[in-house]
Length: 254
Image 1 (cartoon, rainbow, N blue to C red):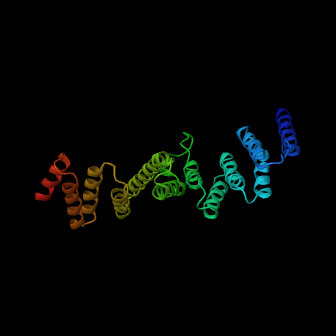
Image 2 (image 1 turned 45 degrees about the vertical axis):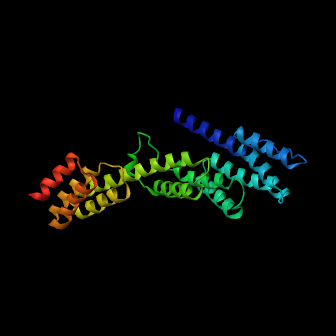
Image 3 (image 1 turned 180 degrees about the vertical axis):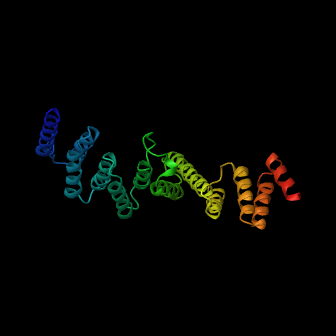
């Protein structure tokens, strides 16, 4: 009986939500600036539907003034704040294409790239580790943020974009290492070699000596002494004067 009552309450709450209105009705002003202010105030208060209506009004009513372009940009911001990442990305991307010379074009391009970063896998403890999950958005974040930095080197958003790109790069590196471990544990040595080579070549900054020694051992197991020797030679060349280079040189001389 208690469960039945609970279901009734849930159904009643759902019904109430279904009949709710879309929130306050916009009161349009006679000039673009005031409508933009009302839209911005609504967005700040998380009244997304109301903000969107104000921005749409300005975009349509005043198509030949800067306020129209700003309204178009703010519509993308509404999608971003609602965490509608694909919609926000599309809106920012279209804005950059339609208004390439607009003074806030770098902002739109940065936010488009940032949607990938915001949509990366969560690190919640109840989920598998980040490295074990789909990396599409992580790669999208790294590629798009890196491209943004190259395209807009003087933008005020470069420092933050660089930081986020590096975080995405580290996640991609961790994923490559996870897959290499996965392959090696299951005896798929060629697959492990491929992932480790990618890690060394595309994601510098890892423990390169450890990875190259590991590649040396895997190449030997694959009966490929030429590539095994090449892994040691890379250690000697890239890490001169280090204990790792001394060990590699000793193995090369043996």
